[in-house]
Length: 195
Image (cartoon, rainbow, N blue to C red; front, side, top):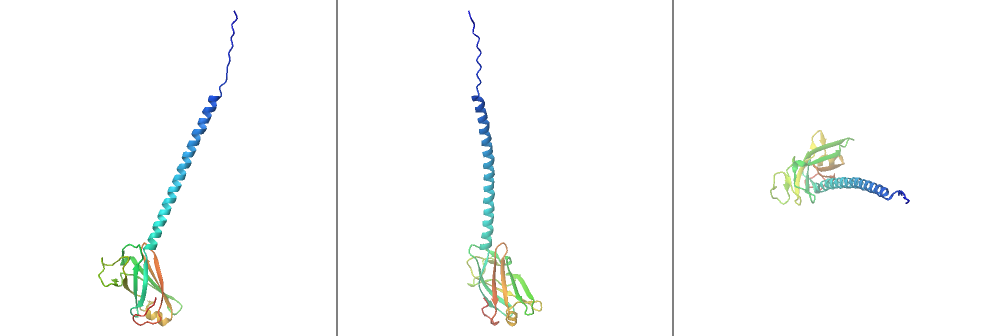
């Protein structure tokens, strides 16, 4: 009797290829997860920046004073008629600041500043203020601005008219925007229009 001892060894490479493919697949999933996390984080940061910019722009544009007209109130004062811009919040008169600058007629500049709290804030319809010193949107107001400190800075109607110059009025709202008007005084008498 003859015994046939045959040992056939076959190499099975299919399993090795499958394990390699699985390792590559898992690596791709990890890379995709990291990339998607970076993309999501970047998109979130961009959204937060856009929101902050939008909020700042809204505050600047809506927290603003609209000058309706300016008149001569006396030789040293301007009578400013204004209202808050649409979308503004109620604003304290201490948070509405003004600056007046003008040529002093001798080649220099005069600068004066204050707040609407310095003058008397009144409603144009004659009713009392809802809250003392608070301006609300949609309501017309009047305030007097004293633009002269005698012998120091003089940008009041009489000085501007006498020197033949123009004055610039800036109105700033704290946390909001700025408005400016050029004041041209062609007549320094009471009630003359300067804007």
